[in-house]
Length: 179
Image (cartoon, rainbow, N blue to C red; front, side, top):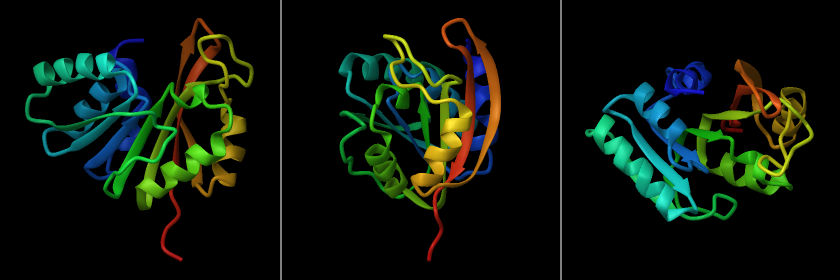
């Protein structure tokens, strides 16, 4: 996959979804760069990864490609509670498949989002993993998991082929609104 694929996978989930976003489990920032491309200079991104070196790589890439973007790096494990402002959206691209018990993480994620906020998931389209993606979830499984976590209006956005587990899909899920 290249930058155009990353943008295409998340575009419909990000478009019109506000300006304050986070990328959880951002690694070296492939999807953080795509998010920056879509948000433009008026956006802000909290980029979260436990690997300080990976965060540094993506900050350098962001500085050269998006010098006016507001980026807040956070070096921590996204499976733990993070102090974040209410967010318009969160991207989790190729990160949730490292989590066996997804419910507690999704509860945290839901809590970071403002009512009606967006969760854009990018994941392998399989329910059986491998050493590099141990706990993927197909879109059919994501429908069930997202609903159980309190998200609604889940829909698939795009897919691309993958040589590892068949395909990669993106999906949009909406955080609950006020009671």
